[in-house]
Amino acid sequence: MTTIVSHYIERLQGESWVPGDKSVSHRALMLGALSVGETRITGLLEGDDVLATAAAMRALGAEVNRLDDGTWQVFGCGVGGLAAPDDVIDMGNSGTGARLLMGVIAGQPVTAVLTGDASLRSRPMERIMTPLREMGVAFAAAEGGRLPLTMTGPADLMPIDYPSPVASAQIKSAVLLAGLAAPGETTVIEAIATRDHTERLLSHFGAEVRTATEAAGAQRITVVGQPELTGCAVRVPADVSSAAFPLVAALIASEGELRLPAVGTNPLRAGLLETLTEMGADITRENATVAAGEPIADLMVRASKLRGVNVPAGRAASMIDEYPILSVAAASANGTTEMLGIAELRVKETDRIKVMADGLIKCGVKTDYDEDSMRITNSTVNGGVTISAEHDHRIAMSFLTLGMNAKAPITVKGCATIETSFPGFATAMNQLGASIANGSPT
Ligand code: S3P
Image (cartoon, rainbow, N blue to C red; front, top):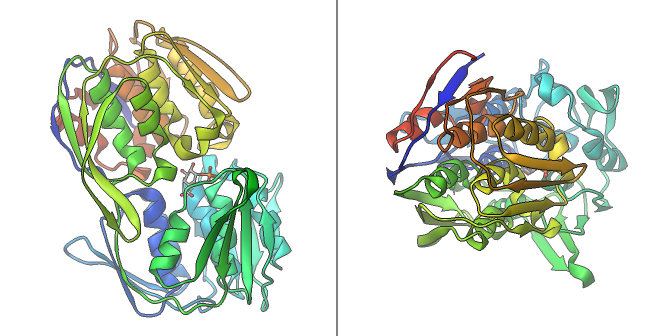
């Protein structure tokens, strides 16, 4: 178990490359494996979660290589062409990897056994099994609809129209990926739009995907089944969810300025940027462009005086992974920041409402919460405590960021999980002026 200590700093300064987008990286490997011909992926996140997906694609028969220059090469087997794995597939800590993989396997007439680490084995999978069962997939899962589970894809998968009961890109993506193997059209209806990386990348690989907005803002996302996907080049943007840590660290420091190059700015992922801007953050974008269907831009961030705001429930889907780090920004924002409609945080790598709130209170930050909301009021961050990351990379990085603005150092234990999404986090932060070092629990 890795323990890391973060000390107060005055300023953060410089330019830092942030690792590739985790969501896009999983999808690029999976669509490469479902394509015919060669896919070349640059900027792939080489974190544990994505490496588990690369291993899963190999286990299903795709050829996946890392070339010397860091490019990843995939030779796929085509839609419906993947093979039965010889062994159990272990998705480690990755909910996205496991759930999207279920959609991929649903479209292959094979039996596979999936498992994961203790955190992943505690997370709900019924939300994916329900629509895939409707399509004809057979499941046997651990109690409560959890991993480990065994699944068998049918010879003839049925297309469905599925109104998703939860605002979840993972549910939408699993159904669309399965729908690739079904004849006719498969549609997901979502009341609130979630990240659309699957749709954008499916189009990039040659599938026909349509999104229609209905009355009251609901979205109907339709994929036309049994396309011939063609291997192609994918440039993965830097992950806005990882950029969020240096970005907030720079905002709450007393002085300094950062440049974060080529960060994904997909509007359905940019809720944190919108919220921080409302809070008075000085964030600007330069060199905006599009790569593999995804908007990207350099982010320029300057130390700023923040003020508390109300974050509406309707914004939750576009910043679902950013509430832990937003709560760090909220601790140093004038007034109170209220976050509404965030119940989904309770079923992430850990219960992120409870773990964040309890840790903030321990650090001296005035915080209260209930089932689906949290309120944080500007406070002196005392620090001088040890926080457990609870198998959650974003909790670990959030408290290390809080330590940069605390009177006494904050120690975080269980930091190995940072490798799932931001390999080299401490080194990258220290190069910008942070003071993060290995430590032992206080
Ligand atoms: C993801 C979707 C989100 C997010 C996760 C990545 C994705 O989960 O929390 O980190 O890549 O589709 P939900 O869609 O379940 O909210």
